[in-house]
Image 1 (cartoon, rainbow, N blue to C red):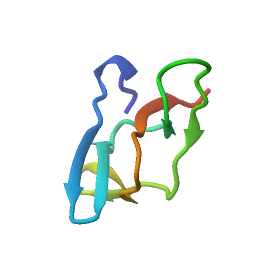
Image 2 (image 1 turned 90 degrees about the horizontal axis):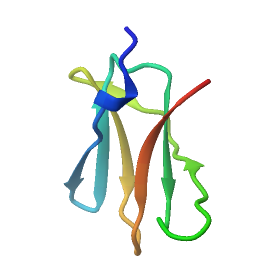
Image 3 (image 1 turned 60 degrees about the vertical axis):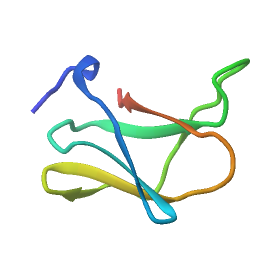
Length: 77
């Protein structure tokens, strides 16, 4: 199912020393990316591991590290 990227929201949930980032599983063709700053020249990098589908949501679990991290979904071309 194709979903407009303007309607896809990321959900971020802290679970112990990890953070779960999720979005609807039917939103296919998207890549989760992160950057450490939203000022200056932006450098967005892909986030691994690949998402796991849990209860209709793509879920990526990351260990919490120091500093700010900003996330986005980018639709693959």
